[in-house]
Structure formats: structure tokens, C-alpha cells
Length: 475
Image 1 (tube, rainbow, N blue to C red):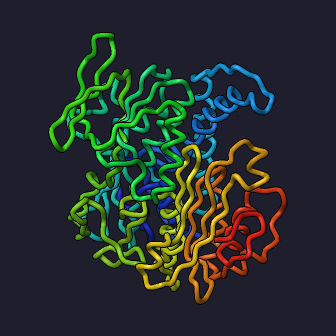
Image 2 (image 1 turned 90 degrees about the vertical axis):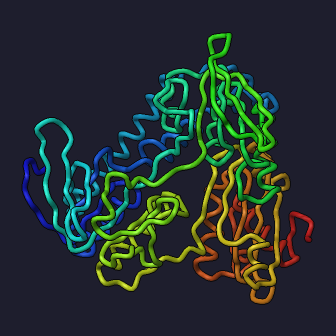
Image 3 (image 1 turned 135 degrees about the vertical axis):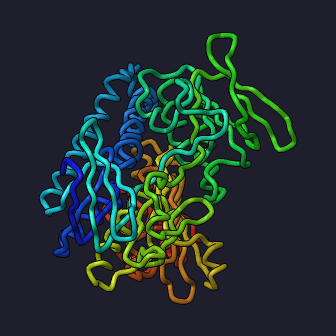
């Protein structure tokens, strides 16, 4: 850290050390550029510290406990006890190891690390305020900048995260006790992942959602499988209802109040209320107007396919630049930004960016759906393989869901895939690779897959689209 009121210079200044920022800084350094990374909080950003990694740790822990206690059909009888403090301690240990690893990687690649909060003075200068009394500030002049400040949970009226009983997603991940009753506001991927997790840990979970279903905009059959499984776990859903407020209940807990568009009001008991209605960009401390950077009506920074803002030498990557708000997309954008600055012919290609939801069952998607392919002018052909016909799925006890592959009828080129079922987040990578490399259905089908594996379902779906499936009925 540079202490005091001094001025330094750098070729590439990166603001924010999340999955977009630290990757951008490392790649810039690898390109031979002098790179400086400013972070005010913790290396790894929201994903590593308060999102992707800690949530998946708790999802794994809760899933393990639930499976152990519900495996009588396999001849396994157990009554596991969950020590939430120990689980959270383990989760925190995973996070600490990874955040420390990010810092070491940055240093090993020659990135200059600066701790503090950066704000633009003009389009070539930022001011960095260092935390702590007497730490002062410094001015950094840059040739190029990359804004990667990420996002934070959206707060809604009457639900302040400062209230102990109102949780953000980060609060839920640091819970010191399992609430008897959990109210969840929002049926998107964050709400559904955490609703499932706490239901498996023994909480009575109630989800209220303004829309008429969960997980908008996934396809109906995908959503139905996840919703049905959640209901089997005891999750109660109330659709078409928006959270309007809360009050203290007569039993020492609280009441979550909702209202429909028609004005009908309802109340649901809860000990904790998780608000998971989306995320908003973190830009309030940046003074973007001083640099001439434009934002859209939702507050996200506008960028082109080379991650450049309206100020050509200033880039924006990750959640702060809007959809897709995915950690791996942020990292890809960070690489593109650094390579563009280095003079490489890099640009974003969104056609093969996968997405995953770590519910039970998992969801993995990439590329186009059948409807999107038709709208884009293709004549789509679709193949499916249900997991209840997969030998490996049967041996895991998880046979819900399917693999679906969408391809162009004329050429056979793979256009997209939707997977819902066991290990969907892993399996979708094969479909993403097929799209990225321009593979055809024949390429996927002719690739010999290990038996017995879940991945065989991808091969069978490709064969099904060609009318040549062996282990499922052809469409």
C-alpha cells in the first residue's frame, strides 16, 4: 500500500478484484503491460466472498446431509446432525484459501496491488482513498482503465438489510443458526438455491414471487422439475404476490406481508426473511461522470463488444456492465478487455457462454433454445435423453431431468443445449464446447463416451436428434 498523498502512474488500472477484475489485471500483466489493481474489500469479489463459492459450499453440505438421511432405498439408514457453525467455518476456510490464492496469483504475475476505494477525477486519473485512520489517499494516473466493481443485492422498500431478521444472500450464507421458518422474497436463481439449501437443513421455507413461476426465463419443463422437487422438500410457493412489508408476529417471530396486483393481501409467518430479488451495479463511489462514462436507465455501464465504454480507453467488465451477470462471463470479459488494450484482435462472443443454477436438480444451459433458434431463422432439430434411462443416473438415485440438444436441421451444427438433472452444471460444458468449435450432432454422437457416466446422456441426445438413439425412443 502507498501511504500518504502521492501520485503514481500505470498503464492499466483495474478497479475491483472480482472474477472480472483480477483476471483482467493478470492478463494485462501477462501481455507485458504495467497493471495496477485496486480493491477496497476482499480479493475475489462478491462471487468468491459472498456468492458463488460460499453458496456452493453450503449447497454441498446441506445436500450431503439430506442425502444421507434419505437413502433408505439404497439400504443406507442414517440420521445426520448438522452443526451449522462447523459448516460455516468450513465454508469460510474454503473462501479464505481461494482469496489468498487470488492475491498470490496477482503478485506472482507482477500486478501492483493497491487497497482502497477508487473514484475518477477525470478520464485519466483516479483518487484512491485508503481505509483506516491516517492511511491517507493517493492519485493514480492511467493510460487505460477497466472498471470491474461488480454488483450488490437489491434492497426493496420496507426491507432494510440492517434489520437482523431481514437477510441479503450474503447474510444467509453467514447464518449462525437454521431458522425454523424462512420467508424468501424472489423465486430467481439465488432465491431458489437458498430456499432449497435451507429446506434441506430443516427450515420451513415459504417463497413469494411476483411472477407466475420460478426461474424466469427458463423453459417451462425445466422450471417445473425444479419447482416440483422444491415442493417435495417442503418449500411452499405463492405466485403473483409482491412483498409489501413485515410486522412482528405474536409468537416472537415475524409476519411477511404480500399483496397481489388486484390488491389482495396475505401474511406468512417467518423467523428470517431473505430478500433475493436481483442485484444492482456498484457504481456509487466511482464518480463516473468525471470520466464521461455513460450508464443506462438501470445504472449499468454501457459497453461495446470489445468491453469499451463511451470513453474508448476505459473499459467495463462483469456485473457492472450488465447481463450476463455471471462470474465466468466476467472473467472472459476481463481477458478480452486486457487483450484489446494490448492491441490483440479480441472481442466478446456470447453464443457459447453457459449458465448454471445449483438447485436440486441442477440446471445448465448454453446457446439457443428451440424457440430462439427458430426466431433466429434456423430450422431447429431437437434431441433429448431422459436421465431415467441413464444407467449411471440410476446408480446415483437421481433420475429426474433430461439433456436436450438443439441443432440446425440442414447443417447439423449444435446451436444450444438445456440440461436439468444431476451434475447439469458440469455436463453443459460439453455442449458449450460443441457450439464454440462449430461441432455438429454427428461430431458429438460419434465421440465415444465412458460408460457408465452421466455424460453419455449428451451423446444420446445428439443421436436422438439424428433419429439414431439407442437407449431412448427416437422422436
